[in-house]
Length: 372
Ligand code: NAI
Ligand code: MG
Image (cartoon, rainbow, N blue to C red):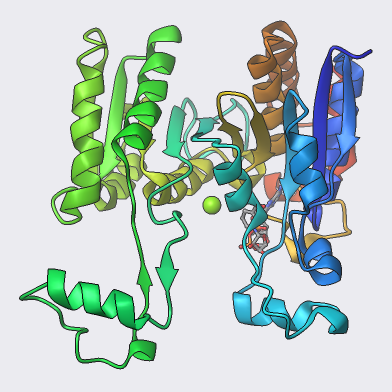
C-alpha cells in the first residue's frame, strides 16, 4: 500500500492541464502515493446540479492531502441556465465548490508564498520573498447574504442601526446585504499560524492588514487578537496597516515586508497583488490548510480562453506540489523540487507564453522533471 493517499481534483479548463504537469514532476520525484481522482467543477454542476458532489466530499475525508487545479464559476443567474433541462427550475443554487471545501473541512489557513525566482523575466523586482497568510473560512466569505433583504432582517436592522439607516425606506429588492463575520477563534488561529511560521523560518516581521479605522467591529477584533498573539512572540516585530495603504506600500517597497496576515477578502486582494510582483498568476501557489486536511492549488482560475491549448504556465501548480511535499513531511523532496524550478527559471531555455516564450505546459513540466 502506498504511504500517502492524495485526492486529485483537476476541475475545469486549464486546471486539468496544470495538474497533468504536476503529475509529471510527482512521478519523477517518486512520491510513494496513490492519486485518487475526484469530480469537481462546472461540468458536474451542469450535469448533476452540484459542482462539489458528495462522493468527492467523502473522498476528501479519507486522504492525506489533495491537489486541486481550478474550477469555473459563473454568476448564480447564469448558472441555472446551464443546468441540463431536467434539472432546471428545481431551485438548485450554485455555490463555489472551493469556498465550500474550505468551510466544510475547516481549511482555515490559506498560505501563499510569493518568491521572485532569479532570472524570471517578468519579476517585478528581483529578491522579493513575501509570505501571505489569508484567513480562509470567515469574513465576507461567510456566505450570509441577502438579496432581496427579507422582512425579518429589515426589521432587526431598523431597530439596531438607528439613527443611521439610509436604506431603511428602500424596497427590499433595492439593496443587498453581505455579512462580514469574523470570530476571535478564527482571527487568533490565522495570526498564530503567521507568527509560528515566522518563528520557524526565522522571519523578522509580521504585518497585519485590516481597515480597523472604518470597519471597526470585525477588523477591530482581528487587530485586537493579532496584538494579543504577538505578545507570545517577542522576538518577532509586528506592525499593521490599512488594506488600501498596503497595496500602495507593497508596490512601492516590497522589501519592507516579510510575513503578511489578513482577514479573508483583504488576503485575497493582497495575494493577487503579491503574485503579480513575482511574475503573475503563473507563479502564485496556495495551500488551504486545516488541522486534518490540506488542499494545494495554484491561485489562478480555469482561464477559459486558454483551455485546451496547453500553453499556460504550470509553475504555480508545481510550486503548490512543493508546498504539499513540505506539508506531508517530505521536505527533502520539496526542496529538491523548488531547486529544479529555480534552475529552469534561471536558465531561461524553456519559457511559457507569459514569460515571453513559446513552450507548452507539459514541456515546462518535463524540463523541471529533468532537473530532479
Ligand atoms: P484566471 O486566473 O482563470 O485567468 C485570468 C488570466 O490570467 C488568464 O486569462 C491568463 O491571461 C492569466 N493566467 C491565469 N493562469 C495562468 C497561468 N497558469 N499561466 C499563464 N497565465 C495565466 O481568472 P479569470 O479569467 O478571472 O477566471 C476564469 C474562471 O476561473 C472564472 O470562472 C473564475 O470564477 C474561476 N476562478 C477559479 C479559481 C479557483 O478555482 N481557485 C480562482 C480564480 C478564478
Ligand atoms: Mg483570488
